[in-house]
Structures are given as structure tokens and as C-alpha cells.
Length: 395
Ligand SMILES: *Cc1c(COP(=O)(O)O)cnc(C)c1O
Image (cartoon, rainbow, N blue to C red; front, side, top):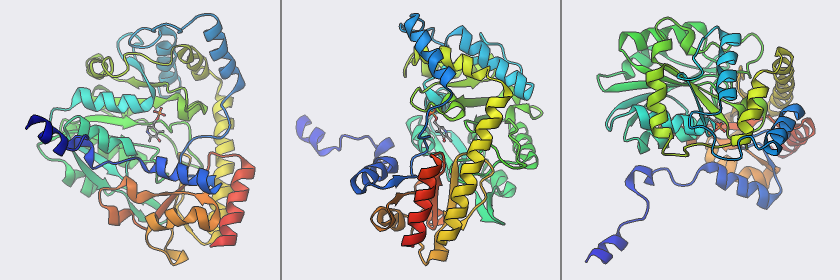
């Protein structure tokens, strides 16, 4: 009896059953099988600064971080994170009680949701969303309430009335992401002011994923939510060395917030990884102290890549949305006579030798995301040129 009912029950629990395998696994396998250029997953195809790589080698050789580092992160990195937040944004955090190092932003998101949510709590998140959000809300027993960013005037915007209407008495927190993956939207001062006022008025916590804080273009400006009135005490801010220094494999991320909120996040984090990335933590401490010239050059380099790919996609016939931040371009495939992003992306490798991601995977309202397709431009110039050439020839 027990054994037959156990075998009748699927191995994967109900909380995770809806999520299946991430699209990136399927698309990256397709890229390999077809020899395609992979503009699907967002990782740079060149490493970050040489001196930061060398700092990691030095830490490893000197035996710093080869054994379990302290639970909250090595003091050098916590101090560097606090100094970075102060230097760039005028936000002061106590490295001992208000900074927590995590296994990338991914663990920071998971630990924040697991540490802050009670089962049944509602989380209002901007849709389309980064693919781990929905799964982490589900693992924490929360309910996600998407607020859809809508295309208009060349970019995706937040409808503030929709955001207000999404908040109920069961809402525990707002999960915000700016600069926003996959749309490339950077929330404006007006939008962030309205989010902050809503959070204060309804006494909500805010978890804000700012991993692309250094990748904003043209006249866009990254404004951390924690800098708005009444926000520092209710905001958990998340950053990552993967995106800011092009070392996505190192998995070094961090959280800054109040002692009480950091402690809640740490309570969950200690039972996930406990600690991670020992020697890399020392290297990232040095990276965060790099001069402004590094960040300016990084941004200029990515801006040139954005412009190159945006022009190529437009020439190939896509409608191209303006990317104000991140390293992604969202396109609309309808001018190509297509409407189903899934079908389009599944066929594209055979058809053009290029891999992209259907934005629909980032939506609960799949139909709202159906015609949109995301391309990553954090790749070498020759790779982007070749991709543009292939798309133009094939579409
Ligand atoms: C890449 C990414 C993450 C994950 O960052 P890691 O530091 O690699 O874990 C989180 N949020 C967004 C929006 C991302 O694009």
C-alpha cells in the first residue's frame, strides 16, 4: 500500500511541478547541437578585469578563503560593499550587521524570500520576471502577483495604477528589479518615488534586485530604491559581482539592509549554502574598489555592443525596444510576420544559426509576452556582427 501510493505520486513536489526545466538548458543544448551563436543566456564571453582575476589567484595561493569563510562573508568584502554603496549612492551600511555575502544574487533572492515570507503571503513582482523569482516565491510558500510592464513608445513601462491595485492586505513585499531583465527598462525617479510611497503607505517590505546597477546607458540613471524617503529601513538591496565585473561563474553576491532584515535573510542563507566562493570574495573586495574609470569603460564597451546588436536586429526586420540598462535587448517579432516567440526561438537555430530566448517564459500571462524575444549583447564584437549577418540573411 505505502509503496504503491509512493510510486503513484510524482517525485517532484507540487510547489515546483509547474516550473519544469529552465528554458536556458533547452536553448543552450540547441545552440550546441546546431552550432549556433548563443545570444540566449546572459553571460559575457570574455572575463572581467585581469587584476581582479589575479587577486583571486593571490587569495587562493595565500590560503585566504580556502576553508569555510565567516557566515556573513569575509570582513574585507563586507567593508568593500559598504564603501561601494556609500561612494556611489551615499547609503551607509554597517559592514558587520547590515551587509551579507551570498552565493550570487540567486541565493540572495532565495534567502530573502525564504527568510521574509510566511506561507500565503503575497509578493507583487514586475512581469516579465527573472526566472528564479517565481520558483523562489513558490518554495517559500508565497503567492506571486504579477504587474505587467507594457510596451509603448519604444520601451516597456510600469503602470502605477496597476501596481497600486495589485497590493492587498495579504501583500508582504514588493519584488522589484531595476535595471530590468529582460526588458532593459530602467525605472525612472518618478516611478521609483511612486513605488516608495506605496511601500511606505501600505507598510510593505521591498526586495530590490539591482545586479545591473552599473549597466545603464544614455541618459538613464540607476537610482537605488533604498535612497528614497522611508525606504532604507524596509528595503533589502541585492547586488552581484557576476554582472558588475563579468565573473558570473564566481557566484559572489550581496545583500544590504537593516540589521533585522539582514538577520532574517541570513537565517535562511545559513541553511542553503552556509558560505561559498571563499577566495573569490577577496578578489571581489578589490574589484569593488576599482576606480570610476573601470565602471565608465565597462559601460561604454557594453553600450557599443548594444548599439551594434540593436542596429543588426532592426536591419533583420525586428522591432527593437530601447535598452536603457542590462545586457539584453527585447524585440517584437510581429514585423517579421511571426507571433509566437516560443515557436520562433525553437526554429531560429536551424533557420539562422542564432539562439534567443522567448520572453513568454518570464510571464505568468504567457499571451502578454508571446511576440517578444530576448537577445543578449554581452558578447564579443565579431560574434555580434556574425549573428546580425546571419539573421539578416535568414529572415
Ligand atoms: C543574472 C541575474 C541574477 C543572478 O545573479 P548571480 O549573481 O549570477 O546569481 C539575478 N537577477 C537578475 C535580474 C539577473 O539577471
